[in-house]
Length: 480
Image 1 (tube, helix red, strand yellow):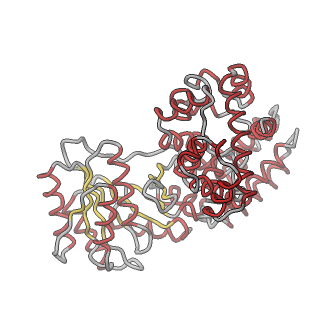
Image 2 (cartoon, rainbow, N blue to C red):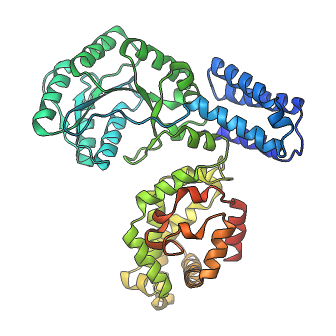
Image 3 (cartoon, rainbow, N blue to C red):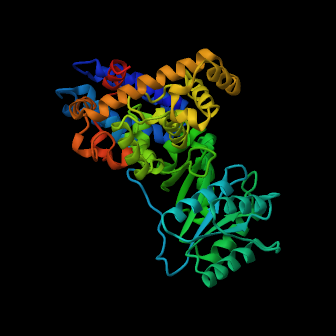
């Protein structure tokens, strides 16, 4: 996501970091580059002007020009301005207590991903302990009600629907149904059009009046750039938006919508859709997105993703296995599958400091898929004891996985090296401490050493802020 603008900012900061002094001319040239990058990203012109003027005004002060490290000081100013442009702080949904009903009205044009966003939001609220109900009130788009029904069934959230063709009645009745059946949050999926028209707006105004929502959320396609801002303004004028959900954020290489919305409309971005899966739905943290845009990564979000996918009990069992030298190919397969649960490799790379903007296709991701196929072609007995895999078995496994015997041999050698390295690290507390110190991590933040009781789940995100990716890569080479 945001690859183009991230690449530009990364290059700008590399140039800045190499300067021991900064002049007003340096500042003007750098801000001009930033201005062009923002315009190419389809950021609103008013937003760009405001950003440029405030950055130059602050950067030309003594705080930067006479700083011990002017490059870092200038970078911080740009980061702070970017966070401000995106909305300063995270904004939460304003929901009522569980004893009463909170209505969330979902608005947007056709194709923005409104129905998908509704079910993702419902899944998130369910996980947080709410009892959501989805209301199918999009009676215009063919199969919209059926799509919502299938998505609701998939996540275990009921969908209220009627045979009536009156969307306003459906919405009103869904609240009565929720009240009688103990649902505390009603998410109303409304009809959109290919463009804003009077009929659509009139229907939405009636639904809002009948349901009295606590949140009126616009679902906008991030890839539409400034058009998303214009759409938000139109909806806000007639319906009074409380926030925005940006979909297809993972496909947005420019970032114009995200960087313009808050400044122009004054409405916060609450969530972003980062993929097609139900779990690809993130809370919008302005400071974290700013960090990603500027190529600084987002380790906190990365750790949170790990916390969601790593089972603490399973991680503890894995640690004990490593200490007893019982790591198997079955365990390796489970590790591959855990990484896949965290999302696309591109989204993970974007969160790693120093790697933001790198194209995931440059990595050998096919290698992991190939290894996964090889292990899955083994019997369970072979996965638990790789020593029994002789020449005939290797030939059978290669044929079953669509690979070669050389590929199978390579995987087994790689597994043996990994197992040996893990054994050394899990048993050597001194080595663990040195690794943590070189990464800028406080070893005490890791429960029980080397992953502790919860693997990444036991890690304090704040302890990772000083991570040096160059050192990490150098260390990885030494452990091969």
